[in-house]
Length: 181
Image 1: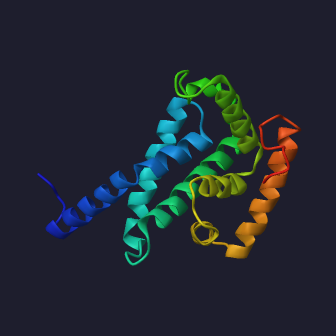
Image 2: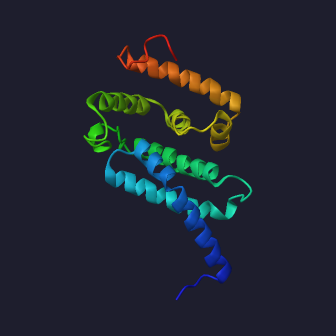
Image 3: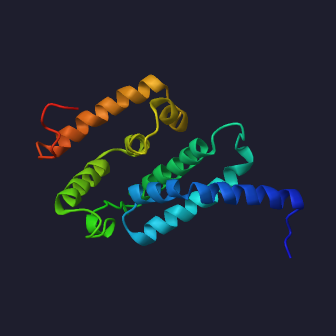
């Protein structure tokens, strides 16, 4: 027997439908911050719990995905900080084949994926979140809304991230060294 009122049950159903429709956000963020499958599952569960706790404060006139990204990234970055303080930093040193099956991409593609993953791990939590939003196709405006920074600041930070990633790639032949951006 449910202890929720009919209104609360309806609200819970709306929440569940929205989270289910945007589940990929949780999966991608968890995969970007944790390599170990158990840690990813724990982070995804923590994100879902925090989304539920924050649900009453969600402004329904705003895009759900923007709000969800903000909550999920805050949980991921906070968890990463706690792990570092405790000395349990997940360096994401697991093989990239764990995330991409042998048949999904060719050898060159796997090599590039490994390079991108290593480069992302060298970024701080905030910059990693910004890069993840950028790779997801979010505009500078949308990324700024999620992260609580100005659109111009997003563009500036992304430029710095690109420079840092180029330095980290250290001349690796990724096919992008032909003078194009």
